Image (cartoon, one colour):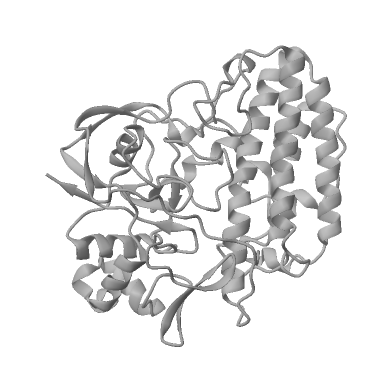
Length: 421
């Protein structure tokens, strides 16, 4: 994972867990990390506060996890990689929990099967709250008392854990939305929720600077290991859409037979369309002759001007072919974003690229269980860039690489197009 020392905590314009931490005294660094920890942990509970005990147990598909499990898993992360490794006085909360709440860290020990997480009705929600409180007290005690010579490594793992928890804050919302979309009563996660409005302004395509560009994370601020090493990429002459593809444009694709025209689809994509019966984006349904979509605010009419959400890579690729355009590579997207020529790059939809999720040249995973965080997933998945309306504040940056399998569409995923010149 990223290497972070107390003297390297300046944030490159982001407001993540460590924003504002620059050349700090040790006492100030301890205070900073205590505040950052409380902020991130509090956001998880704020998001979960909209859910009932029953809501927090449900697991609507194998790829999703119950909210209760998310809350416990991120706590297990701090217990396993921070407290047990760096606090000799720490007492494990419950010996059963590592098996129940490990995810995919094989080196950290055996784990409960992912598709069966929804069967864990006990320990209950109160037990998980107690677990979080127990670990929180221990983490804050460690922040305040860890010897100075150990603080670089402790604060490094703490920062990784905070960003890891922010990832699960987003998953908490995407997973509960999938569950609510299966409910015939169309429940709202938050009745007061309103979608993020797309940026107004000139549309169309704009030139991307051609030539050789540096890609990947730069500087001493936090990043995940899959964003490194920084390397050269050749960008051909091309133009990229300022804005994301909208629902109105997607409706044109549907009305033109987009979901029934095999020539628009990759072979695997067409097989998926046939097997799943796709006729529209995920969570769309016709009601009283009009299209509606399931949102965090419940079932709502599809807004034509809003960016399309919940589409798979296969759908994004088919739409690009329908439009006579292409999806950007992740390098093209990053160069355009660095140049500041993209509207809605962050905060609305993760944007599919045509890039396979592969290691950057010279990539080496970290040793130990933390080395399993990203590297072992670098096959059979596609990269998305940007961030979504569910991404927590501060958990976004120009070099961030999200990745999912091509059929996935329960995430807040959309697209923008490019054309070559």
